[in-house]
Amino acid sequence: MKSVTHFIMIFILGIVISCGSSRYDTKYIATTRVTLASIYVKDSFDIHISFPAGYDSATGKLPVIYYMDANLKSGNKLREIVDGFNKAGKPINAILVGVGHFSNYRVLRRRDFITPFIKNEQDSLISDEKNFGQSENFYFFLKKELIPFIEQNYKASPQHRTYIGHSLSGLFAFYCLLKKDRLFETHISLSPALWINYDNIYEFEKKYRRDSASLHATMYLVVGSEEKLNYILDGGRKMNKFLTEHPYDSLKFTYKEFEGETHNSEVPLALEMLLPGLYR
Image (cartoon, rainbow, N blue to C red; front, side, top):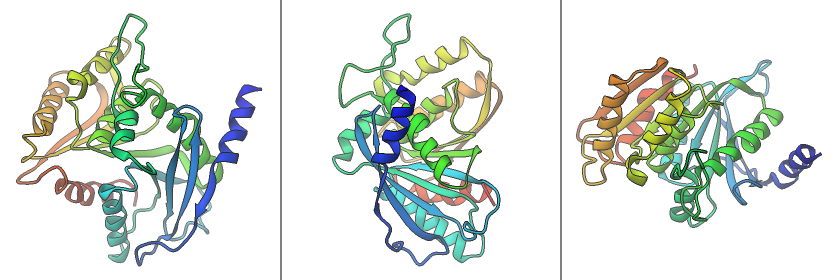
C-alpha cells in the first residue's frame, strides 16, 4: 500500500508549470518544464525535458541524458551545444532531462550533491546536517521518483542512461558510479569537487570494492589545467592515478585535461567532445 501511495504522490505533485517555446531556435521540440516534488529530499525540483526531432514518430525507446544544474550556466550551455549539433545536421538522438533547483542553489547543491561521512560499520549514509551531505536522499529521488516518472511518461529507454554533472554535481557522478544498483551506463564528471569532506569519495570506493572488483560502466573525468586554486586539478589527477593503479574490470575510464582552461571554460569543450559519441 505504501508503494502505491508513493507512486500516486509522484504523479500528483509532478505538475506541468511551463510548456512555452524553447529559448533557442532549435530542432528540439519546445522544452517542457515540470515541477517534481520528492518525498525523499522533501523539496521540489525544476525538471527540463527536451525531445529530439522525430520523437513523436519514434516507435522505440530513446536514450536519456540526465544533466544537473539545469538552471545554471552549465545546463544552458549543454542545451546550446545540442542545439548547435542539430543545426549542423548532427543531432543527438536522445531525450534531455535537466534537474534544477528553484532558488538558493548554493545551499541546495551542497545538500544534494555532497557525500556524507561514512560513520560506522553499518556504513551510515545520511548526514546529520539538513543542508549538507544529503546525497543519498537525492540519489533516491533520481532512482525512485525522477527516473520512473520519465520512463513511465515518455519514450525513454531504461538501458541507455547518461549522467552529466559539473563541480559538486560532478562529484555526485562518482557517488552514482559507486552504487551497486547503478542507475547510469555512462557518467560524465566535469571539474568535480573530489576533495570535499576530506576526499571521502574514496571511502565509498573502498566500500564498493569490498564487494566487487567489477564496475560495468563508463566514466569520463574532465578538468581544466588552470583549476589549481580550487583543488579540482589535483583532485582529478589523484583520481586518474588511483583508477589507473587500481583498475576495475569492465570500467571504461577516460581522463582528460584541457590545457589553459578553467572551471567554467572547460565545460563547453568537454561537452562538444563527448556528446557526439553518446547517441547518434
